[in-house]
Amino acid sequence: MTGRTGPAALRSEGRGRAALLLAAILPVLLLTATGAHAAVPGAADPKPAVALSGKQAGKGGEITVKGTGWRPDTLLMMLVCGRSSPDRGVIGGTNSCANADGRAVTTDSRGAFSKKLPVAEPPVPCPCVVHVATVTGDQSVADAAFVVAGHPVAALPKEDGDGKLAVLATTRLEGDSGILTWFGAPPSRRLVLTVGNLGSAPVKDPVFRVGTAHGVYAPQWEERQWRGTVEPGRKARIELPVELTAGAHGDYQVSLKYGTKVLAEQPWGVGRPWGVTLFWILLCLVVPAAVFRIGMAVVDKVRPRSAHAAARPRRRTDRFTEATARLPKLRRTPAPSEGPAPAAGTGTTTAALPWFTPDSAPSEHRPTTKGHS
Image (cartoon, rainbow, N blue to C red; front, side, top):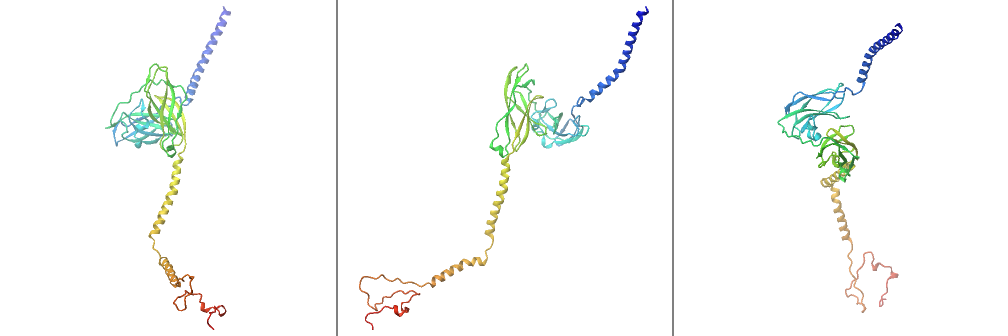
């Protein structure tokens, strides 16, 4: 009896010790797991949000926008945008916003901010929102519904498709820049891609959003609608126009979004418009030269002439006239004829040059006359 009871008692005592040890270790394991979960970066990061001091105001008014959950020390842009909703975002990108009346704000070390925003009418009808987005770094966006009193209201465009389109081929940019782009015209391309419908319903006339980002700045989104239908299990080739601002140059990133999903991203290197630089160089050279020539012509016309310069041509003319008057007048001698020589004293005269006189010739060279002694 005793031999049976001894081992059972030992096993019972061993189980009791294991239970005590597990009870002592379990709190330590729970604390360790909780600390590890809290140490994971971004595991408990709050979502960016904005709150407004009022839900409605008229043009010229002012509201206070408060934000929480943003990245610390981040530059944000606040805009009043039309044709928007907190669920669908800003349809048409910043072209639907009152950009001239926007305000910039920087978050504090806790990722919060508070800033006053003037109420302005967007260029498109409401529904309107106060749109807050990051300017640099990873894009973060938050929208709050807002009513601009007195501004027209129109229904939002119908959202087609269920967001089940996927890219099946490599995305590329096609097209070339013309000669005008070299002189600062807006660069343009076509974003070409092949998409397939992975859903069970057809997607008709899908609306895409094309974004262009320069450097570290957040993309500027614009709405592009493709006309056509993508049947379930089928694919389609889509071409969407992409255009930058005039004079744009540098490295750009083109993104394509359908619904809330980014389908593709494509880099785009834009050359510098050297024609504009050449134009300004020529302008800086030609204009001063032309002004100098015009100024010299004006000065030459308006400056008075000196008395010495005015009398010089007349003096030359007088000298020429006096010299001409002092020249001797030559008389023409008639040509000799074959007949007999005319008798002396007939009145025939011979022209004598002023520098030669026959009477003054030496006696040895004088001709002799027959009949005289």
